[in-house]
Length: 289
Length: 337
Ligand SMILES: Cc1cc2nc3c(=O)[nH]c(=O)nc-3n(C[C@H](O)[C@H](O)[C@H](O)COP(=O)(O)OP(=O)(O)OC[C@H]3O[C@@H](n4cnc5c(N)ncnc54)[C@H](O)[C@@H]3O)c2cc1C
Ligand SMILES: Nc1ncnc2c1ncn2[C@@H]1O[C@H](COP(=O)(O)O)[C@@H](O)[C@H]1O
Image (tube, rainbow over all chains, first blue to last red; front, side, top):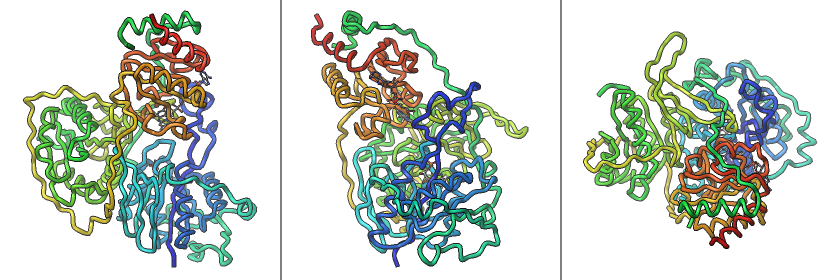
């Protein structure tokens, strides 16, 4: 028994620590100069999944869609206690907007099959869209609870959570299956277990094509995953037309690098007199009282 | 009423009142609808809101499609999303706008997923323009403009091949127009077609909490960035805010690192403010921050880095250490004469 929990995790460029070097001369982004990290709120989603598993039992499967490199975040999931990890990777997924991303993830989740709970981060820091979670829920035809600040109760049939809303919060409950989007408020993610790092450090990938062996769907008999599963368009039974760029209704028309329009600005000397003059000027103009 | 020419706004209500963000979007929709040659419409969901919805007319909304049902009195995802989808399919707007609120960001992606149409989050500007894809020209389509990639770039996103084009916009980004007391709106009652078993979320408790900070209403805001986030500097920022009768604001990393709560955050993903005076202390001035404060009437920037982008939009720039400058400012204010 227990719950089958799926967590979607994304590898993202570290946009919070973006520096000048990340921008090329021509104003485009030099992705290579940006370190790739585990999307912060996906760590909160994973933590919540592990906590729920500890409470009611079950199995935690992490799925990431991305380039081969995204296997790194799946390793991080294993280090923290995930039972199984799946990399959804294929050139044909490239250029996906949130609609095409949610479609691919929905196909992968259906391939996994039995699930009670799907946990996503509220948003990925590369775009802050917070769209993929609700779009997966819609495509799976299941309920969703977004912006979760805390899981307040969980049992074999239902989950109760606190949602942060503009003017306060609400406590809501849903039966399974349901998708949750988890915020940073919900918990403090655990760090990697040294023992698990030893176990999984050198784990390889097992590419499954359409003729893959069903046996790969469950972790190894001794509870240790032997491979990061890699699934492509065929494995998850996706319609290539709905994947990647061709499945994305939104198109980037134009990218402009930011040019600051300088306004008329006064340099105030950092001296007692300079600052006193500024304060007086503001008082005289009735800006401060 | 031309198909695809109207601009529809999702109306969010809180405790029976239309949220400011919805009125801001209706205001902005006037310009978009004029460019498209259509009119401003709205989709509203709730219970006994008829009287309140009349407000929309004063902001230029011509028709509101209203689904009234006791079960819809409080927001839940599936019933609201299905209702919006039904209204969009029935009335075929060209553009649909949602507030980038917890409710808007819950419903809009679900609706976009059902309709398989484009949706752009947190737009900071919306325009109507033309776009060409593989020799097909779309004369009038929605330009969804937002900062991307850590704010180093501004992206213009279009989705002309699917209808409608949808976008979410944060509260405070669009300006509310002056209401016209003579403006009226036609309230069109829509049938509620949501089945009982679509109500999968059980609401156990709804708690309103008075916001601790009210940045939107503040005339003076003194804001702390990462350069003013240590306890000593932050205390000085607080002191100055208190002294001037202003509010305390901050940049996002200050919230992310747990120093201040989100209610203080100014910027694209925080609050958009237009105070008379904004004092940026130890804030570099990345676009996402500027998006929330660049329309302040006066901006004072304090930063030890003379190259900090904040100086480019500041009316007064002071290069120096925040603690040093703030101490001098507080002293100058206290001894004003
Ligand atoms: C999708 C997205 C949405 C975002 N939304 C927002 C948002 O809503 N609001 C927001 O603010 N940010 C937002 N950000 C983050 C934004 O890109 C910047 O990272 C952030 O604004 C930087 O905050 P900061 O200026 O406080 O910190 P930093 O960039 O670290 O700058 C600190 C500044 O302080 C100066 N300084 C340091 N020490 C001192 C000292 N002793 N005296 C004087 N000066 C000193 C430094 O020179 C530097 O300029 C968003 C980012 C993304 C990717
Ligand atoms: N490529 C992806 N692979 C796995 N999960 C994803 C991916 N993109 C988005 N997600 C999930 O959806 C959430 C919201 O993403 P976004 O809509 O991009 O802000 C993230 O926090 C992830 O949990």
